[in-house]
Image (cartoon, rainbow, N blue to C red):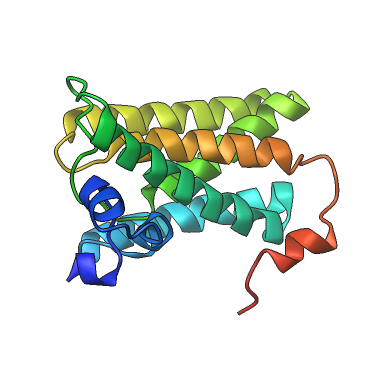
Length: 177
């Protein structure tokens, strides 16, 4: 069922040619606990990033982080060897964790850009906890998606510079509900 709804992985992207799953996998979850934990993280980080960057740019950071996170995971799983304790990235994967670590990457960049040691420290400590979880729960956590999501959030935040106001083209990039 997850594959039909848009889960991603090397076999799905490179074997079946379903590139859209690099986007769709972020919106799928493997059960009630998975979605609850991800919702709690988005509930905590989303408003903070929206305050720092603006709501439109927060949505852009969230989506770009998911795409970059799953792209790294799929690429690593297809072309690179597994790393002990971190896994391989070769399986089927879903969840909002890449997007969530992207929000942490944006907060980390904000701390770097503005000199806020509190923002850098918060994001650094949170990503350290994600890394520790990934090592101990390596079989069920996609460490490559997390790393790619963090990097994607950092890069998107750098491009969207938090010290400049939101523009109209940023707002076009988000969906109004």
